[in-house]
Image (tube, rainbow, N blue to C red; front, side, top):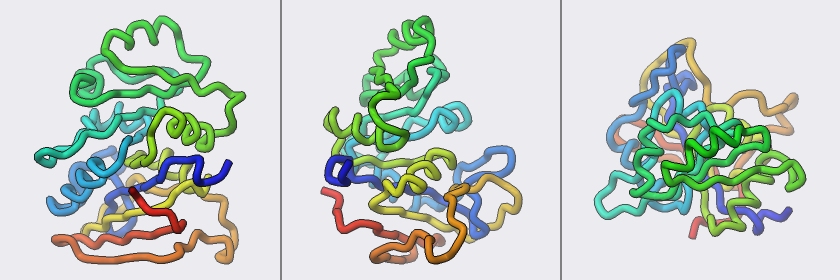
Length: 224
């Protein structure tokens, strides 16, 4: 499928100077400073949908809304193959603020789906006949009106989008702190020689408060 058939995809994360998005215990709030946190909310505002894996929901219990005054809330999308998102989670407790979509596999329990349906979320089953992995997800979202997608985490989800070469823009916030052993944002990409490394067509870099922001553009497409 051509890129034009997919939403515009922005991936963003905040990391320590030694490349960690959380401590070994999963503590990640907040690595970046207040100025960088505002940037994250601006990205939420500027995209039709925001996507995270269910692991992020289980670990952080995020809202995924835009907390900028008069800012638009994106559609909140969770990759949740077996529907593990808790009914009591903040995201499912606020479906009246912005829609919540659960993308699940065919093995998800019908009983679990019935329980979660009472929260007002919407379900999308990712059938194996509709393509593979990230391609399947992006095709489904575009068909349902999502023209721009902000991928916010966690590490496995970020890695899967990068591995699929499905990222238009990567925005990395680097904070001046060291964590040591912890959780990395990007895992195995299957790159064995530098000639195969992901290199942007262009990039921007600027200082935001105490943090440094690096923005890499891998395609000529723009966020509209």
